[in-house]
Length: 391
Image (cartoon, rainbow, N blue to C red):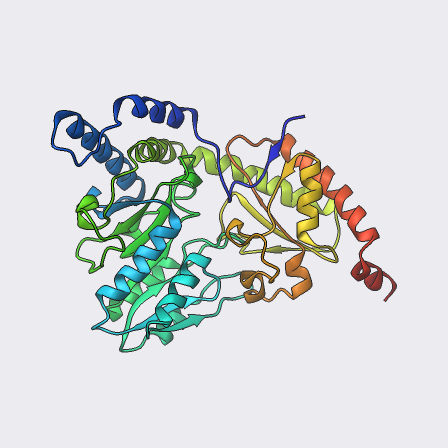
């Protein structure tokens, strides 16, 4: 039996066209793009072609506004720390939200140890930030607001355009972590009005180990890595050319195929939500019902533990996750689920199902059948379920 993969928020397979382009680049574009000889110039041309394709995906006005990084985490670190260090004279206050990815949380934690202050605004029961609370949190010494575009655990999309209007009016830079959005849903940096945008290749079927940071022209930011003058003097280090070539091809296909991809995964998501009540009882759906990623479903199943469900589904050759892959192994309850009002027990019983372009309706049916069996098995031995049943 083939494995049913429903964990696309964690990783995605390479598109065949991306793989072919990367293999060709291994043979053809192996030279250093910074070299002055002809093979180096050819490599530089391949690099800039990929940069243009990636810039087109997010509608950057100039490809030079795109800086390639090693991953989404580096992109976030570069944006937050780079802006903080470059703009410290303006102030040392930053505004964020309670449901950010650990890359944001820990970057801010590092800055707090250096004398910066942080205000974290709450979210509603759907996981959405209220723009007016962001406005209220901005002070005279605020120099950056960092709010994610979509949440990787509940899928909720944030009102980033409204937040960007507020930051622009107040003269504050706005960074948006869009790692799980770019290439999955339309993200237009001109429409949003964001100053910095973090994104990665893998969510739109490009290679891991390559990502990007959009930096609007005129934004004052320091590089995190000191060395050469690569990436228009924004990030030192020899380019991961093969990965960047793959990201460029993936960006081209993401832009062209996005409407079809969204329609496909949205149909599977709707099928799952429609059929779920016929298979299990007593669960909660997390995230906003409309303003959300089209491929993600977050389910808090009462009276059982999510990691046990993941392991038992794995035995059935079905892959899902229970929280962000970056937080796997932590015994703490998800800060995202706590922020939207889930208690500890419900938060610990959460599954995250994410669809991809290769999934089918048969995959949904297999998942639901297996989930019913797993939930029934675990509830038979659950003291919480026995207490609720007899209480």
